[in-house]
Image 1 (cartoon, rainbow, N blue to C red):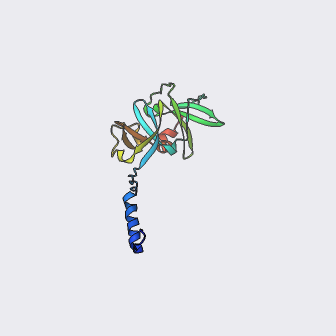
Image 2 (spheres, rainbow, N blue to C red):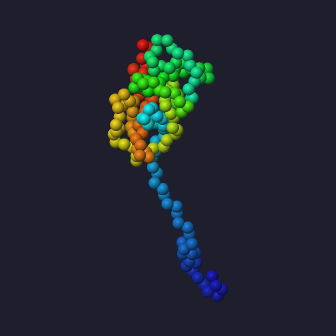
Image 3 (cartoon, rainbow, N blue to C red):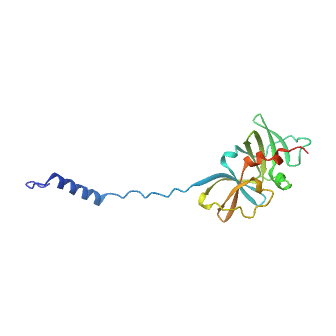
Length: 181
């Protein structure tokens, strides 16, 4: 305000507001929130699967085991994991009656579902994967009959289909629970 001129206080406030608006930075753009699903990605043969993150309690390298007499061929044995007895099953052996060829990439996924505590031997654990719900497939393409009962949904990511394998469904399966010959 220059000396000798008298401005109304409201006029002074309006001028201040105009200068503030002129030099003010814009508000940040609101980003679109995209829902995603998290899982542990693994492979059985050429089949890419992902298990819900909450259904896999641990990942192990192949432990030393004791065979179980009278058990089906896909029951690999029982391992002592930090004082707990862990039955270890070959997931490919169970699903396809084809034993997994163990390599340095083979891992055991440990599940604890509805009273079932077991390890599942798989060809490879690829790691944690994030799938956008926008990439969810309406149907499960090319799913074979052996694995279909254990699948919940599928996603398309990086030009590959990833089916969601339910450890809960596996643990509830009467076929999986019948381990004796």
